[in-house]
Image (spheres, rainbow, N blue to C red):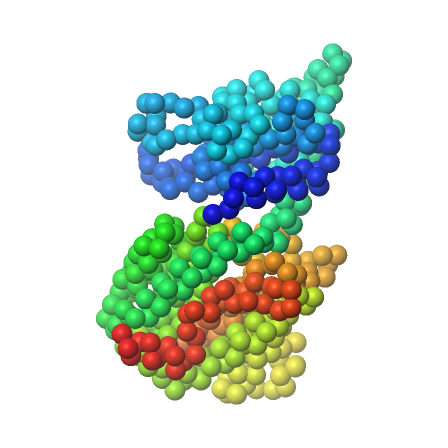
Length: 437
């Protein structure tokens, strides 16, 4: 878990970037109705969690650099014995201060009376518009209430600044504490993928494999998936975000699994592809080894000082070479890459940032150029090839083969570390593991 000291350091760093005479306002996530009077399991807003670790809805974080009576203020729900009997314990104002380090905590129902006074006299408001329309309106209402009092001596903030610009840049570089949690999430996810390989048999339903993944996650302390697991047998693997997971696994098909656990808010993201019956066919193995080569070489390209696009560029070149070698494309490799001739078979990027969000925050461009990789960044490397049935001009022997191999990679001072290396990806190692089971 992330320590209270680290949460405090993050808030301090953000306030230093904001400067005095400013205020940051950040609402928590809200509960979302699933059906009628039931809700989805609550998941805290990632920015809110990053700065507080506070796990409840109906809360608002306020940071006030230089405030004499305390810079860290929280509005949250009051303790309520009746509601807590039905829906679980609440921290209340005392708990917010004792357990989460707030200098001041107020009931959320009092925010209209208190927050305008905290805003008064501050030159700048840091806030991310567009995420919660109702709260956007509340912010402007509070500002306008202060503007209406100017003749009486009020000093409303004169500038609204996007909080996400500086906060998301902070989140892009992971601390040692974050990397420790992410490594644990990766190991839990790796063990789940290994378990799925071991139990897989022809005739099973994709849902059986999904249930195995969820069981393994929860059994190791990761109650939630980082995203809806993709368990795609045969041609389903050619649907990039396939989540129905309700088809029979057929003898002779490949199974593509894209799944990761969430631990203490942090995501893992692993893809592996393996034969349902434990043995690759000739065509499957040929395509698989090209994707594997792209994965391995793209990981090597992920180094500090290199553009974040380097892994993608590396993977595209190798996959195009593979498509030519397999007789699917014809022509000069460089020209085929420039013309994006690979796109019918490889249509996505080779990776993304990962952290509190599986597709984590952080700019990919700086001054319109690809961002340079730096120590502490974590990204996925996930090349693939997808041969959907009835693709025009594609030999039928490739139909229904979909392959993706994905690892989570942290950039280090001199290179990188693969956080998900525990899951086998060499074809022989996969076949041996499945044979043993």
